[in-house]
Length: 113
Length: 113
Image (tube, helix red, strand yellow):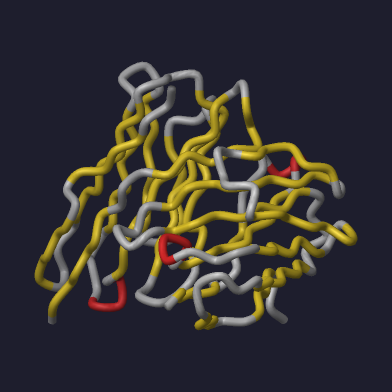
């Protein structure tokens, strides 16, 4: 059973479109995250949600909006996509009582044309 | 502001060698440090998590050490194998923001037969 899953794995779209990436974890964790990995492979946190509440919101354009319908899901919605949004987006989850060790999803490669 | 760097950026070694990957961080107020591996086109796999109170952690052929006062961690890989080829990332959590993982720049390792 996959612990942290993301859909879709690949997403190719035109500039200006709106798209969503979904993330689900079946680990029973209480915190979920979104990361962006740029073309130089540098990973940076975008958002963190704990029990459906936003904890971390890094300097991310407000075109990006995370949505957490329940503890096991954290979706990422992106409006008005731009070329610079092309990257790999990773979802992760953790549990505070296991030292916040984070487990990552397989990633979604977003290409904006 | 916490900054994490990894040296070397890339490493190519013959099979069977013991090797050391280095990770440095600028702020010693860390909660813990986590080592990951990332295979091309894949997500991150957690290898070892070392708490700030620990000096080292071991898993199979991997051994991670932590020296908080000098701001350094090393990942030791014994008897390297071609299957160890991947990018290795270290990431730290600060004591004042345990939800946030700050990633290093990564070391790309190739082990050739």
